[in-house]
Length: 83
Length: 149
Image (tube, rainbow over all chains, first blue to last red; front, side, top):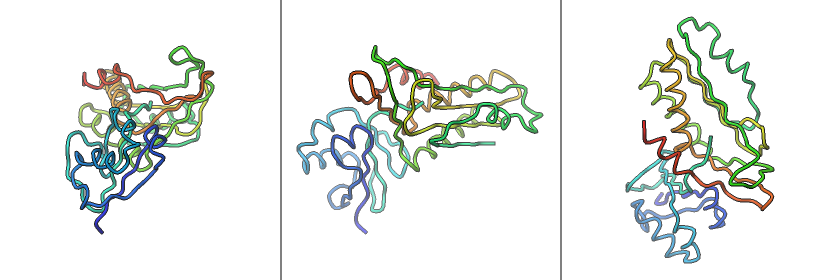
């Protein structure tokens, strides 16, 4: 396997029209590369990604950069509003 | 005891309190918080509130928050319930309870867990108002409250 899963939630999911997609680690293997890659693949998503977003890798919140491996579950979403 | 639940169904406060207290002779203090749906946000009438979440991560996140609280305060029992799905004004959204031998830890532990839940647990609210649908924005004041811990 050479891919990881990418999930979108809430407003980001609505704006990209995607709940889930698959990304190759040959294209992206660092979290910091992900946004630029997605905007390059989908220029129409530039505005959706221009806002503050949070990230999780394997269901744990990540701040800063981290390596992305095949089989990972990555998620991007707007700042949370529970409670 | 650590009880975490993400559910559509409503919760019953008496049952939750009973669960905190049954056969509990150690704790002199039980503190709980209930978050409810309001009918007004940013000056607009709210008719319904939809709560989305990240299945899998939601439970993990709430458990992590509760475990952090347990390492910082002597909390013997913790219960967290967060509802998802479509709610309306006056509905209960969230329940956070902490028990401890004495009250300071119970109050602080419950406050800490709510402050962390507001900024770290993967839920998102979407309101239906008289001016249409909109996603609720995260509040800077919640970030500030999280940081004071």
